[in-house]
Image 1 (cartoon, helix red, strand yellow):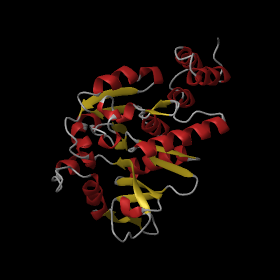
Image 2: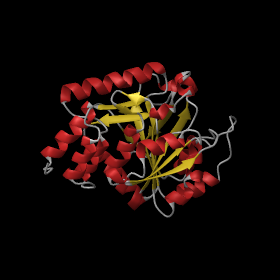
Image 3: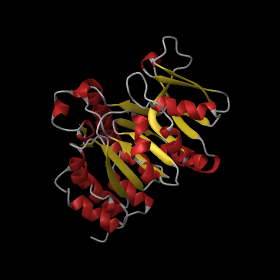
Image 4: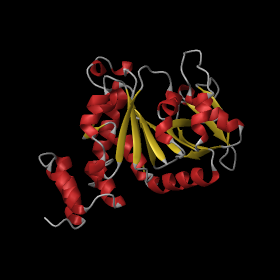
Length: 296
């Protein structure tokens, strides 16, 4: 499966901050926001990742992430010149996807929960063997603000509504989507909505109408955070801070994830930590590497 992180847009709800820097490069406590969606793809076992952003912001992402080799992954980059909708990611990334399945994660979404890696890896395997699309739903108290999904007893998606006045469920559709290889051809058949965008909901409806869309419920014990406003950005940072301090672990630590997956060695992880050694993040990476058997 190939991964795509969509990190475009102008971040108008975060102006004036995002007039100077991409929203997805802002810090969420101790690391750049984009580390969190990248970690989701890495947890799912995905190593070939396309970063899509604006022409102005892409050089900054390249400086931050490089080619991904230090984490044992491969990053490539592509431009989305205008915010033409989430589904456009599959037109921009068609060559990247090639003949494979695809995962799209939005650059401002944060996921965290016990057993998330198992859920993701099973979902990836299901898409690769049974085809279709898999979406992830999260219970919210104000579903009328979101795209809302409803599933039958077997987890088959049976309805999607955008910001419904009377929601049929309280499951908001999150910014993480898994698709079979038909996603590229289906995206090419979409027509722009009234707001001039290729809507991800229309893409998901195409799978639903074929009976090929599933909805996995991320219920109790999970956190799904959208960092699109100043308030939600602060709340996300506070959430990460509390968990990391109380549990003594780092959420979305790419070096630790790569080490755990066997994509880098303990010695490589140690060197990555040493390069950031004056920060607590770097100290944590070095500690993880030494516990894993780094030789120095």
